[in-house]
Amino acid sequence: MLDSLRKAAGTWVAKLLLLLLVLSFAVWGISGQMTGGLGSTTVVAAGDTEVSAMDYRLAYDRQISLMSQRFGSRITREQASALGIDAQVLSQLVAGAVLDEQARKMGLGLSKDRIAALTAEDPAFRGPSGQFDRNQFEFVLSQVGMRPEDYLKNREQVAIRQQIVEAVSDGMSVPDTFLRAVALYQGEDRTVEFLALPPSLVQPIEEPSKEALSAWFEENKARYEAPEYRKIVYVKLEPDDIADPAAITDEQVREDYESRQSAYTTPERREIEQLVFATTEAAQQAHERISAGASFEEIVASEGKSMDDVKLGRIEKSRVGDPAVAEVAFDLQKNAVSGVVDGAFGPLILRVTDIVAESMEPLPQVADQIRNELALAEASRVLLDVHDRYEDARAAGETIEEAAGRLGLEAVAVDAVDRSGQTPDGTVLNDLPESAQLLKEAFETEADIENPAINIGSSGFLFYEVKDVTPRRERALDEVRDRVVADWTSAEIASRLSAKAREIEKQIADGTSLDTIAAELSLEKQIKRGVRRGVDDPELGSAGVTAVFGVGQGDSGVVPGPTGDNQIVFMVAEVFEPAGASAESVPPEGRTEYQSGMADDLLDQLVARLQGEYAVTVNRNAMQQALSF
Image (cartoon, rainbow, N blue to C red; front, side, top):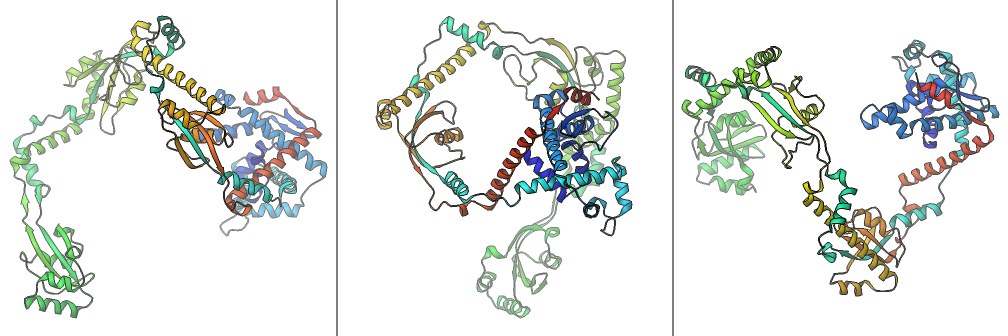
């Protein structure tokens, strides 16, 4: 709370934006500045300072908005109550009220010139020139329904409150002794000896008695309930579902093929090698050497390059980045070397080592592909018409199966499925179209009614209907006996293993060494050195590391293993302080955090003392009245 209070008195003054200033009416109990709506009913009084019902409601609504943003959805009044928002807001208002009362008692204030200067500094009121603009000032205030005099009074009270906060916390520094203790705490590492107790240590587990199994089942009966199942019939309508390749004629296929021959043509590709030189003279000399009998490979080597350095790869003409290179390379014969080319990156010579001629897929080879594509295109064109004809058939009284059959669509029946997509035998239906939304909608509707279609992307629809509902029910033990036995056995293993671990821990406390215990149990004692706070160790787990730092040197403990099926019994063998730990070894951001925390602690104490000096009264009825509007 006091961290927010500090920000209210400091950050708001330093970087005041009008919206935050308006909200400060609500959050920090500035009384008597806003009237109307809920009237003048007082929610909080501290001495002569009062917080109105309107102030409380504004603070409450703001906190609701902040929490809703954090959760990603608007929270309800009931959820807010469960989160304690009403109590948080009240605490904030009381803190603000006692500070305002203290300021009043001390006679703190600001001159009109200082208030005017603070207002002029507010970026919300700057005009096009970057300076304070009276018209902008009045326009912004009118947008939020605030009078200029209300703004100025509020501005004054926020600045006055800052004077009290700064008097308490400004200039505070964290003692070096504290910072050194922090450095020692954060840098400490430990050596841990431990045994990982496997489940086999307490196995085999005997079959449970009838009484034990029945008792376990009764205690955990909710775990074995049969969920609600629903029978769903759905009809999917996408282009694929109504496409009819047989309706596409050979003539249509031929015409499409001829109009899009480039789509079935693979252009000529060439294996190109490119050697770039520093100067035209060097390139010309290299070309002359090749003409005199030197190989291209020799020239590449003489330039200090490998053959991999000069390969462009097998590419088509349009993909060659340099037009000059493309023209020359695609005019060369195989294995021929070009003359000097003025390339984009300098003079160069080229060689083409392989040529793959242009090719075109024949019509018979791609006819089926074209036929399917044309059928899909036609299906997409008439999809909405099919949708409307389906809706008309349902409106005329036809069942979902009849309407689907009329249009050549398939009505798929799922006899029983629960909310998670599982059937009674445990099979997960992974092939349900739009599974998440279909199941959500199907379990929110009623049986035997027509429901709005679910959109499938931008080009499809999913019609569905719930045909039957099997209510949730308790299962008898005989129906789930195998599951119950397995669960009982797992729980019994965990319980016995935990008891065994506690027994071993007691042996260690009584003086038995881990080595002796490990030998008796045919287990390997493990040693982990350099364990630091806050890490998620693969053998100990994060909970294990926390437990290790929860005891002293020579002490032991028990913690579940990170795999979840074993227990770890450990002993802290050694504790090492970090070398050179000092106040200077704490990073600047850490110092700032501790300084802020100490300042907040002082502010907490100040507010607590002020609450004792000034009689604070709370009108719960006024609070409820404020929230009823």
